[in-house]
Image (spheres, rainbow, N blue to C red):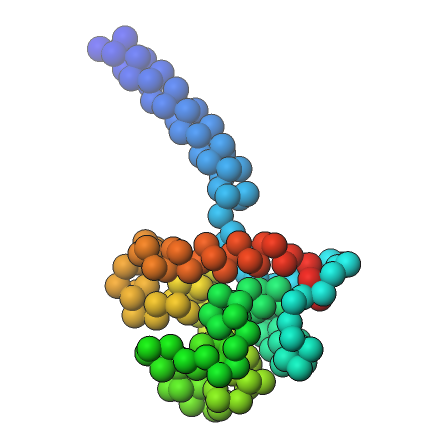
Length: 180
């Protein structure tokens, strides 16, 4: 009986050691693999290149970035994916403008989504609300694209459309890192 108990304790000790080591390794790899950052500007980040924003739209994007705390490069990436910087873009679902904001979303934020500067601000504020809600950049971006209802139903699992959108935005965002 005593021998069995000692063997059982030894096996449990080994299993705990392995689990702790695996958890530490997983935490290290997940930090670099998942972009779960809060999308806030990096302190002391300097840039040698400008974001590819049409000059007439630059003030709107800078204002929206300052208003929401998002990196300018993130908002530019969303605009590139959503509308390719076409202020008059419209989706089949009636999302409008540079950041493809639904009129009802703009109305809930007291912003006219048909005006380019206000469309950018509405999109940025809505994305901020989603990031505050989900506390994960990937889920916030997916909810921006497919709607929060779809994300709530699916939980932490992104469907193919949401995953493709998130990857597209994150790829562009990464390529624009540090732009000003």
